[in-house]
Image (cartoon, rainbow, N blue to C red; front, side, top):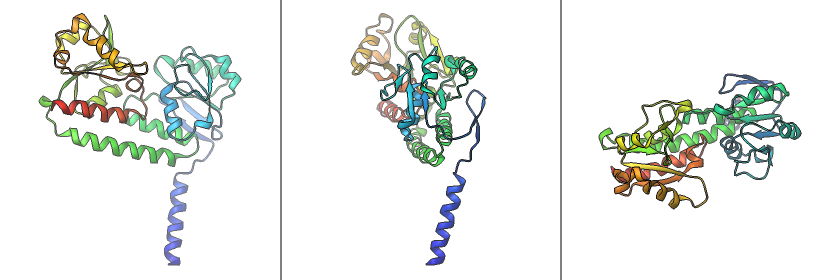
Length: 296
């Protein structure tokens, strides 16, 4: 019995050491910057809602001292816009690190560096990128075990759903379009996390073969009409805005004869989730699977 307990103790200690963080710690962010942390950050600014999700899911809410005006988390100081970042407010909050998004926000990295503020870019384009970014945040904050536990849970859910959709033949899968009606419609294309989620859920994204910045691109109403999708996914952003979002799409003159409109397959999905690469994409995956499976 003593030998068994000793073995368990050694195994536990070994496992703990494998996941222990040694500072100073240097990691490469999603923009290719090598960033060194002398200690685990105690004061953190989240410059994008998607990153706030990581911090909350990992249990670091008490470390968040600042968020942007677009964030639903309200227990931290509002620093204003995502772009341009308010450098004066950021300096006032004395953060140990600013976690920021890539894309249009990337130019703010140099501005932060010039005023002596450490920044780390998190810019996932797919689910693997979400897992990687979760692990980076957990490691930076000093507890990669938290990250591994959360990633394993998310991977398990994704695998279960994607396995269920895997055997559906391509010709049986619904053609899907995501976007809000207008003269120019921004949608998810090749290389975007939403394109991957649609595919894993058992759909075929009609813009999946088209590329754009971070995988997103604009298309015209004429393009959507030519594709005549089986399913329309319309984002809504206001609370309880589902009905209004669906009505706006169905009443758009150019779309009245679309197959999805005629057959009642226009669905509102949370635009805040669909436009942010974070842990909530797994819930969206399940939601889309339930929608698409009605048409198999």
